[in-house]
Length: 400
Image (cartoon, rainbow, N blue to C red; front, side, top):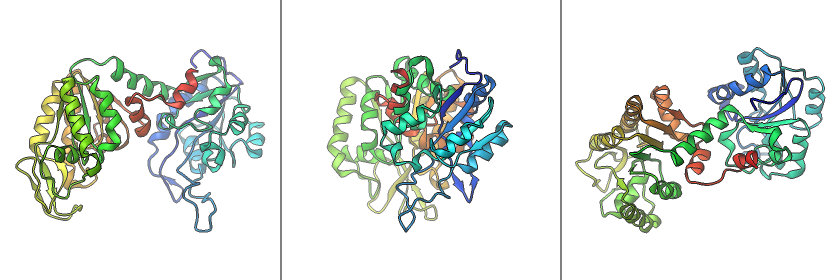
């Protein structure tokens, strides 16, 4: 992309502007801001820029009469946000690759942006329809994918369209390249000791990740709801904590596999518990791994924080994917906050740290520590699949 001559040429740019919008107001513009470097670069080179993005799931959240809620899922508010951020002319097309797009494109000048309406208003998007992908490709001479958050989807505007451009006319945007490079860095060029911190609700969601990391990590620290299935597999009492009963045998296999590979699989030594899933009930810290029958674990306790922090501070490479507890509730945020601080402290001592998107990114931002770690991913599902060792369609289509 850096070497392209695009002055006066049309560039099709796929971004991830899937931002929260309420009553026409953008509540969090961070995803827009992440792609501004790519947009500014292409505009500075004199490109005519067509910008594509999805927003939400409009075809799966229909109005009661079965029609699309065009008001709720329109990208129109984003055009004004872009105009304010960039100070350039931003034209909004009321469709995507349709008659209005063509009409507006004919008026587009070098250094200007044409933002198309939500790609997912078109059923061909999620079906990766080749005919519609060709319509998109015919709009421009170059294609750039800067939407890492959608890179794990085989959709028309994220993957199929790229295959209509040769290698000299398609590229990653700056954000996409940084995401891919940082993901590959921890998978293929990690300094030891290498520690993964995994959390979230279900062990079933992280099976492939755990198995892939076992071939790379020295330590895997597990918190969050998924820890209780592993604790139950070891015979501990977990009360009413999250439990995947059908994954008990799998949990036992993972524990044995870690032992056979010489990987330390470290589980919580205590928990912050309550009788209900609520921020308005009394809480208690357990003495050990066992939880009373009428209580549920909702955060890791201080012993676990101390233990996990010791591993984190000794590490040279860190991956964090998933919170340690229900950090959205203040009574159960301490564990996640302490682990976030430990990761930041290790980074300040020279460790490389990758925050794997999703809830982990939300947590590191909530606690004001994003600037103190090495890289915060914008793509929860995409980064998870990359770390699992899967090929991402949106990445592969650029490299083909």
